[in-house]
Image (cartoon, rainbow, N blue to C red; front, side, top):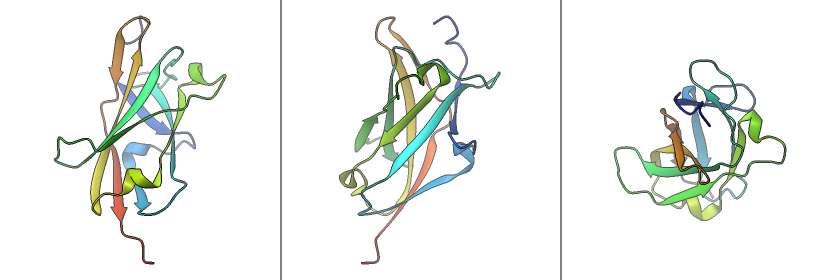
Length: 130
């Protein structure tokens, strides 16, 4: 993986830049998922995730405590396209309402290489009405 010198940029699989959005979650929802395409920051080319483990670390803005992390699912045949998605549980978002952020990190265990996406993903959590 000689190309692991560029910072990563996270992009929604639907083509909307995740960095420009806030992922909004209502406490108690049980189907939240986040789909991402990791690309090289300078070229925009997909970041080859073959052999990688991709993890999202979640925390409150201005905090150092990470209440949970999620390992991404990389569907068969999509690693070279930089595609991954995170499946969250209801318990993941049993946190105080407010602003949170997620950091995505890719690790290649066979080569001990690691790359972290520079910009965090923004999350906003609110209480359920009923």
